[in-house]
Length: 88
Image (cartoon, rainbow, N blue to C red; front, side, top):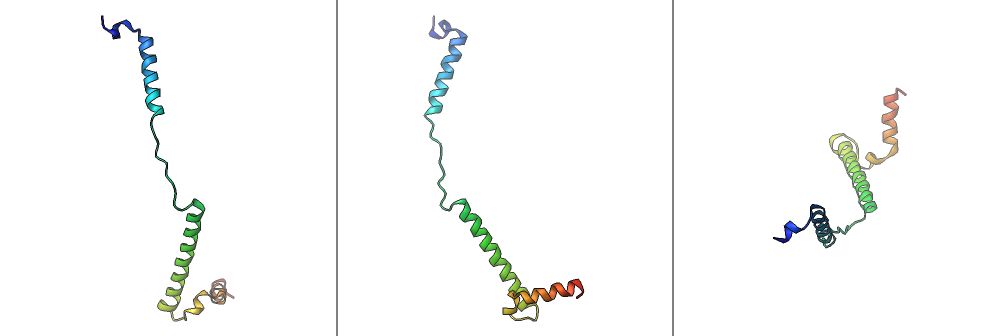
């Protein structure tokens, strides 16, 4: 008789489980090392968004409109726009 016939079904399943556990413990998992931490990525996104918004305001106010470049980022300009909107 062969060895497989001598082993009971329960013992065969136990041997298979043990083999799976030994192969699973030998696996090495890929560990990703981040070059930039998450907080730095978030801060960089905020800075880039703010810079893009400022550049858009400057182009829209000075190039497309008739204003000067320095007036595009002054609070008085947008206060005047809000006053017009509110009917003051």
